[in-house]
Image (cartoon, rainbow, N blue to C red):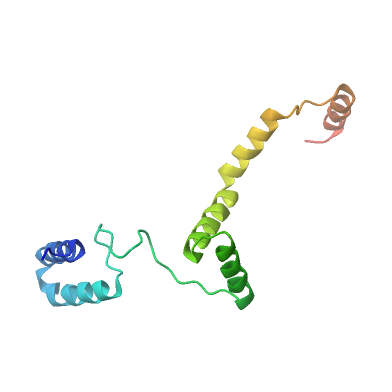
Length: 130
């Protein structure tokens, strides 16, 4: 029977930490065992059926229910729905991305002022105290 790669990586990780800090060996081993049982020890390997960080969030019942229904409707797992929603939220709120999107839109549109608007703006700026 082949050894579990996560278990091997964990052994290597613990051995390296114990070698670096021999006086803390019992505490490091207890920590590694506890983290392995919880599935939260970062070993660089893929532990479980998903990759990435697992987290828990609290949602109001109505939001959870609506998300559950939407996930069923579009045939996605709730996890994937939440992942995509957070990624989209981050993309929409990243300042440089917003500026880039506005700049791309401005390049597609004619943003030049007509003569009368340009003249009025110039007069207003010239009369303003800087």
